[in-house]
Amino acid sequence: MYELLTMWKVKEAEFPHHGTVEEKLKFILNYAILAPSSHNTQPWLFKIDSEEIYLYADRSRGLSIADPEGRELVISCGTALFNLRIALHHFGYTGKIITFPNPANSELLACIKLGYRIKESTDNNLLFNAIPKRHTNRQNYQWWDAPQSLLRWLQSDAELEGAWLHIVKNNHIRHQIAELIVRAEHQLMADPNYRQELANWIRPANNSNHDGIPGYAQGINKHLDFATPLFTTVLRTFDLGNSVAERSRKLVEQSPAIVVLGTQNDTQSDWLNAGQALERILLRSQAVGLNCSFLNQPVQLPQSRSELSKVLSQSGFPQLILRLGFCKQVKPTPRRTVEEVLI
Ligand SMILES: Cc1cc2nc3c(=O)[nH]c(=O)nc-3n(C[C@H](O)[C@H](O)[C@H](O)COP(=O)(O)O)c2cc1C
View 1 (cartoon, protein in one colour):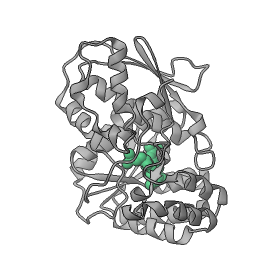
View 2 (view 1 turned 60 degrees about the vertical axis):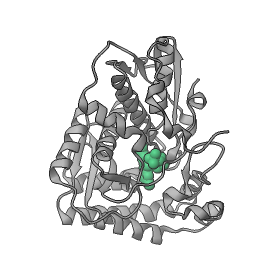
View 3 (view 1 turned 135 degrees about the vertical axis):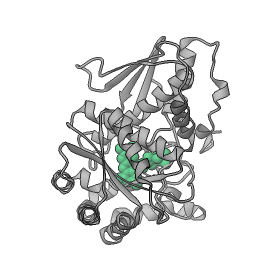
């Protein structure tokens, strides 16, 4: 029987060193599926064709209200691609990756081969070990400073993947971002279709689809998991904008670090880069004990997204807003099995 957290217990000792290329590629997918995705939609599909993996965007899992262009969907696929790359290196392969190999097919995001043999670097090993430990952590964080040197490290991580990371240093800017989040949250939560879509992806922990955000990840006590459907009914029916927005304001104002991940342009290719940058940042943070969560509401609305750019005085396109800090670890969320995401 499927057990909620089985996917997170992947054993690297089971890598088929003496198996076929196909078996090796299939094993590596165990790490790709642990990647984060908006609302835990896991909008990816993979096809293994003897010597290569094709990564497809699964648009049927898109969020038509919160993400009509599929921007967050492609970012999510980018996080899975990054895990694939790190796992390939870990098991001794350079990986040979071609993104958007067929411009006529926008669903096909990447084609991945094993590549040549290499010895894994210490840094890659650090990121690899963080894959099964990384979880979005929505709790309040301790008010300990996130060291600037660490944040600068995350900044170079983003640049390595063709993205930028803006570290919000100034309290005035932090306050302006908090205001943008509050306004965007109000606007989004006032839309019944947005609430409906969000509620559709909040699920009891042991749901048979193996996806969505379980109540406990949203702060619902695990003993009240049975009441998740009641919570989603309330969410669908009432505009909870005020309380949700006020909680977000506190999170921004009280988190040790707020950072904005962005790209110079806003194409599918930039989104895929943003996803890889995001996962590099999340794994690095996990490796050094920093927790992360998202406050993306202003980026989901065109008007507030451009206001955010102005507030940051940063050229390019903000893709995600993250808060970082220290606190105790949280439980993993469900994942579909490799079989479920294979075409
Ligand atoms: C592109 C992207 C956007 C996300 N946006 C939000 C968000 O706005 N709010 C939030 O609480 N979590 C957000 N998340 C986190 C997902 O909900 C989370 O990754 C998913 O539920 C799986 O849980 P895990 O990260 O703990 O594995 C986002 C993740 C990604 C990759």
